Image 1 (cartoon, rainbow, N blue to C red):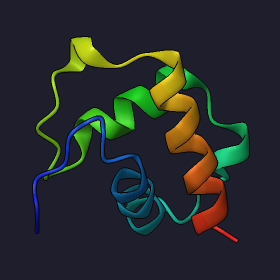
Image 2 (tube, rainbow, N blue to C red; image 1 turned 30 degrees about the vertical axis):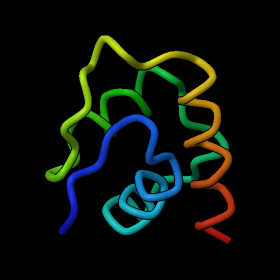
Image 3 (cartoon, rainbow, N blue to C red; image 1 turned 90 degrees about the vertical axis):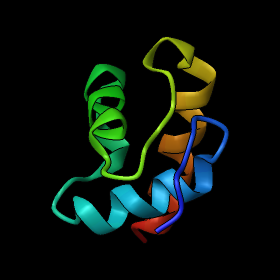
Length: 67
């Protein structure tokens, strides 16, 4: 399992889709999304480096992954 950082938005979305299949990513709040990303086992990103644009990109990819 490769280590992932904030720039790996597609990989993060895939991990979230696998780990939380019961969640509809269309309705997740950014604080919730941020928390779940930081809790991923292979996530090594600096929590302070997140921003709305990154979270939005992760959410969009996760929505695509969950279809």
